Length: 134
Image (cartoon, rainbow, N blue to C red; front, side, top):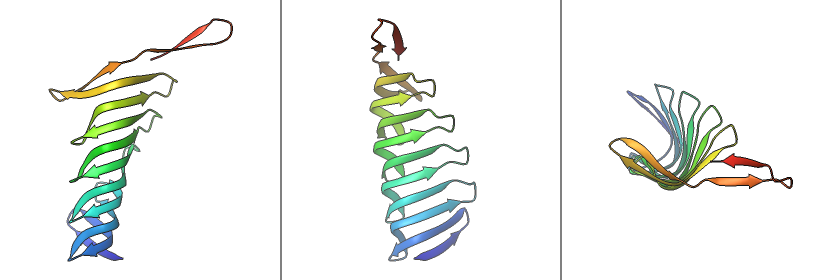
């Protein structure tokens, strides 16, 4: 294990040829923290990113960006599970809300905004009463 102090934070972990490589944790001065895989000084592989707000992302990374499969947890209990592309929710995913509802479908970035095509699901109990799960 090595420790490197930089102007914007501190890295504790494996090095290869003087670069962050392998397993390691970066502590930003802003309060952000990343624990996971590194490759040639970049976040790459699997890892968890903690935000000062209490939110966190767990999943795949490529070239310092969320890429592949991942889960984003909001402090309020909401979460997104699905595909990520270039640091954005994009592709198939499900967003779960703390009130029990959910959105399921295709996520896509357009003009800086996430758009989603939702599939509405219905749960019906034995008495025929329904609860909308969207």
